Image 1 (cartoon, rainbow, N blue to C red):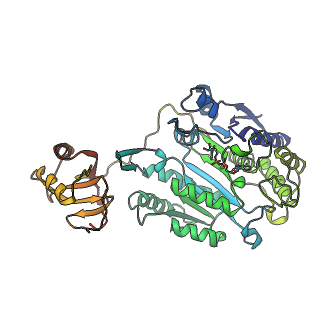
Image 2: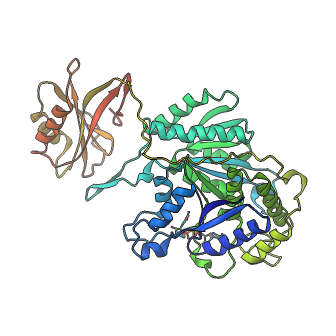
Image 3: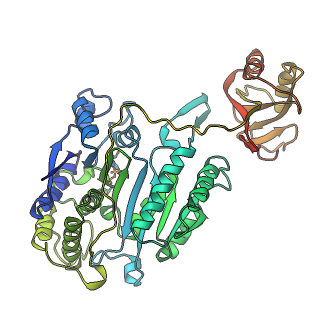
Amino acid sequence: MKTKIAVANGDGIGPEIMQAVLRIFEANHVPLEYEFVEMGKSYFDAGHSTGMTAKAKETIENLGLLFKGPMETPKGKGVKSINVTARKVWNTYANQRDFRSLNGVETVFSKAGIPINLTIIRENIEDTYGGIEHLLTYDVAVGRRIITRPGSAQVIRYAFEMARRKGYTKLACAHKANIMKLTDGLFLETFQEIAKEYPDIQSSDIIVDDLCMKLVTQPQNFQAIVLTNLQGDIVSDLCAGLVGGLGFAPSANIGDNISIFEAVHGTAPDITGKGIANPTALLLSGILMLRYMGFTENAAAIENALLYTLEHGTHTGDFGDKSTAAVNTNGFADAIIANLGKAPSKDFVISQPNQEIKATAKHLDKNKLTVTKGIKEEMVGVDVFVEAGDLQPAELAELAKKRLTDNFEVVMISNRGTQVWPTGSIYTELVNEYRVRFEKKPGTVVTQKELLHIAAAFSEDAKICSVEFLMKFGDKIGYTLAQGQ
Ligand code: NAD
């Protein structure tokens, strides 16, 4: 009985490495059947704005599992990345990337005898990857960084479960909550809450810049790290570098209903069509997928053959001993097929059973919506972002005060987040956007309509670029102070 999955060959070297990997699967009698779907650059070119046909979308949603080659998104046409769209639309909220020293892939750490075996879990949907950006004035661009409680909880819970399955004893949350107190702060707070449910896993947190320094000096001290999307993106490429480069970096995009398995690297246009690409990262991603589907015996057999092949010095041109001849993509796949049934040296053998869970795709008939209810909310004020024009802060303050009603006061004006009124420094340089903060007076109650009314009245004196409400949720203040406030 074979299980059917969707396969997208991808662009550039995609078809070459996919064919190599599927040949290895076939040689190991992996019980899979493939439905090839139409996705990638040529489908953008043919006018599909999402880069895939309606049939491809339907197939992937029905089968719940996509094994994909790298894909190119046309540049400068205003279309969104197909890779990011696929992850976001299907809510593959956890991006798991496993990094391990491989015998035969020489790195500074392997030379020093320091073994690396760590997993990065990157939040995959939120953060700046919403791509919600605006030019507020010709000089000022802003992007929205969206971090949510349910989105953070999903990926953090996945990270703890993964740590348990892999037999890890510790999980770290990396963040920048010292600076981004509300966004990274929410991610960290959610981590600390969920950690209480996993007393068997030692949880800790680390500031992301400190993490980078420690990863390059003592990577052996880490087992699993969970991060927000952008920080996770950067840190996972750093980790790829620790174990030999992107050619050895597999990736699983895990969701509750649909999961996508792909290599971390791109389409490698510089070597496309030459037949020399390294299929290892896609193969490792396929191995992750087999484990996820419960085909742990196939996964272990193929991984052992790959490790044996690497250990015996077989290599494509992008890595390995330059004094021995490189093989091409097909030659590398042939060597792995010939080595099926063989095992690498003792410390590297992959044994049974093998950690991952079986996927259980659910079919939905409406969008899932998660809202935390029962929290007392209070409106406190409004930040009005306006064009500076030629106005100095004190001049703008006078205009703002003109628009006040009895319940309100102007509490501060900032420029690029630094307070410039009522106090500030003459040396703070200004750009063409101020934030003017109107707050209600203590003891008063204000409505959203009144706050909008203040902003509307103020628009007669200054050009408004955007408006953000100031909220309190229970005891929690829902906005930050300006630098220097
Ligand atoms: P890239 O990863 O394609 O290539 C970077 C370098 O690594 C190149 O020199 C390339 O030859 C080499 N390389 C990559 N994979 C290799 C492999 N398997 N074997 C041997 N060498 C390999 O990155 P790029 O050049 O920045 O991006 C090219 C395209 O890929 C862009 O259109 C980008 O948007 C896309 N991309 C797609 C994905 C994805 O589908 N998930 C990821 C990253 C980039």
